[in-house]
Length: 181
Image (cartoon, rainbow, N blue to C red; front, side, top):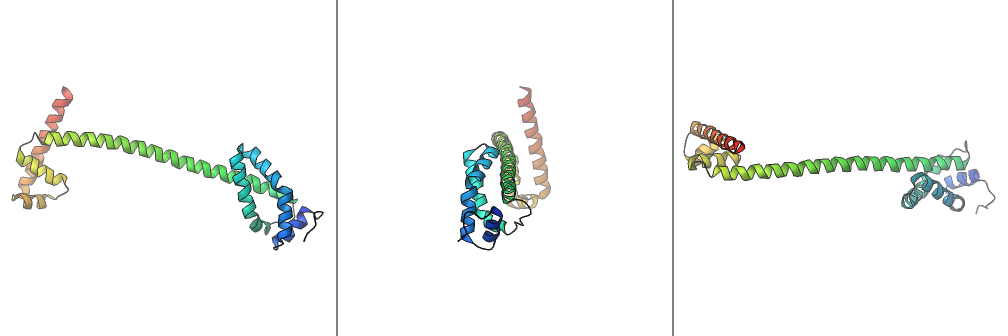
């Protein structure tokens, strides 16, 4: 077991090769300081706790990269600062995604409302069309090809095309009359 009078650097090197007592001593010495720095950097107790726990969990792997070229505390502070920067980046990315999602959802809902209104108008307007035009248009709006609609209705494809053209013209006239009123 390592004794408390060992330097942080010596403890870090021992912990890097698996000495759990050395690792425990490092945590005892620096946990509160890591938390305080994280708290000062984040301004949030919850975020500071998360960052501190993240650092504690990753520290055993990170210690393998400690070369004792800098003081351990300086090295550890860099880890804390980087962890807080990572947290901020994750939050900013999440915020951008959330804002993007929000804008998309707002647009989608507006589009749905507009689409619903347009569909409601179209259903109502189609009832004003003669039955042959209404039936033909309904089949085409149901994503049938002109050939399929012609087969269902027992008419030629040319007649289907003519009926669609006539139905569109009639719907356009209805819309213009409504817009003028």
